[in-house]
Length: 295
Image 1 (cartoon, rainbow, N blue to C red):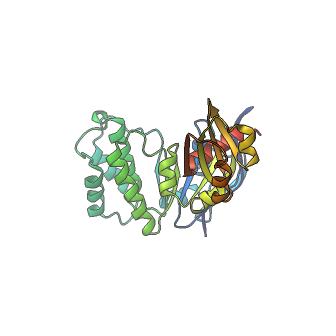
Image 2 (image 1 turned 135 degrees about the vertical axis):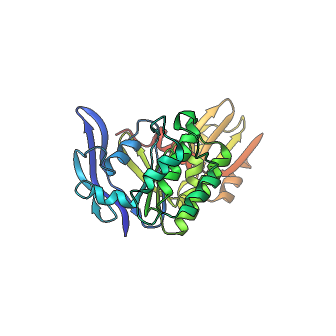
Image 3 (image 1 turned 30 degrees about the vertical axis):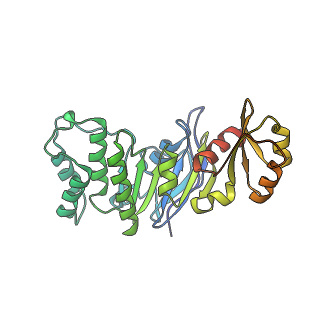
């Protein structure tokens, strides 16, 4: 079953682009990443599928329910952390969580208290006394209190220190084990690669690829850094490499053929430096944005 499914979902703002023909299929129980630079359409996509803004055309379903017609019903089963967290300044943390819990059945007080402890949340402070990171922690607790079937996170680690980020990732892994589906929008490609089962890449309002993280290396190949006065871009292309950058005598290129063949080819030249590593999601992402077509 697809927890999120959209068909040619579009949102435009007059003559300005929003999102174009967004087709998502997020499987039940997976952690699904959504990456792209600022302005690519990540938050617009999220706000559209949550019916905070109406789609211009296309359709979508969450948990098999129409995102527009059945929006109120859908929200009972969703936890959401927005990129920008806003609360009433003079309200205490414990009162915000208590109010949020009143909308759901079966909220377990012990589990909520455990979330406070894990994320180091001071429930007696007013929101006006909290930093951006501490407000984000309150939003995370708010999203998790009812053990949602779907958790949607828009840049959830902004403002969080590394320790709390690690604890958040552990909470997401635990939620996945319980059957929760996680939709994670982020610009932090390392966290997406480490957490997610699949990831969609969005560029200028369009999804340009969906990547299975396990198959990332097989699909993307190796990242090679070579420094040699005898090797130029032409020779890299001859051995099947795809040049990414060149500075002085150092060339960075992608290579997805047999590594033994590569080493034999490079052994013909005097090499000052050679680094071979697996391509990361960041390498793949940059490759898309630098080379993969302008639409």
